[in-house]
Amino acid sequence: MRETDGADDGRQVRPGIGLSRRTLLRGSVTTLGLAAGGVLFSGNSAQALDIYNPFSGYQLTGTWQDHLDDGSLGGLDYGMGVGTALPAAGAGVISNIPNNGTGGHTVTITHSDGYRTQYMHLSRFLLADGATVGKGGIVGYSGGAVGAPGSGSSTGPHVHWHLITPGGTRVNPLNYLGGGGGG
Image (cartoon, rainbow, N blue to C red; front, side):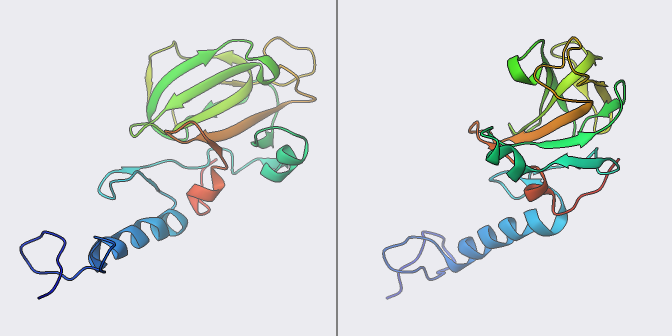
C-alpha cells in the first residue's frame, strides 16, 4: 500500500515528510518565478504582488552591500535632484513618517500581501496617511540635500529605497524583481 498525502487521487508522498512531489514542485516554481518574472509572489502562488523598480532610470549611488558595509540594515541609493517625483513601486496604502531619524522624511507603501516598499530622504510628502496609490502614482518628492528639512543624515540629494517582508525583514528589492524595469 502507498502512503498518500490525504488526497483521494492516491498521489505518493515521501515517507516521513508528508508532502507530495506536486507540492514540492509547486514551491520550486514559485521560488523560480521571483527571479525570472520580476513579480513578487506571496505564499500563495495564485496571488502575485506586482512591483517594479521605479528608479531604474537613475544612477545607483549606493548598493545594498555598501549599506551593509557601513553598518546599516541595507538599502539602495539612487542619485537624483531634489524635487524629483517618486513613483510608487506598486499599488498600496501610504504611511508617512516625518523626520524618521537618519532616514529623514520617509514614505512607506504597504502592498496587498503585506510587503512594504519604503523611500527615505524626501523633501515633501504628496499623499496623506491612509491614502491609496496605484502602481506608478507619485507619493512624494526626493530630497537629501545636506541639512535640508526631511533629509535626515543624507550626504547629498538622492532617494534611499528598500523592501520589507511581511515578517519585518528589510531586503534588497532587486533580488525580488529579477531586473524589473521602470523609471
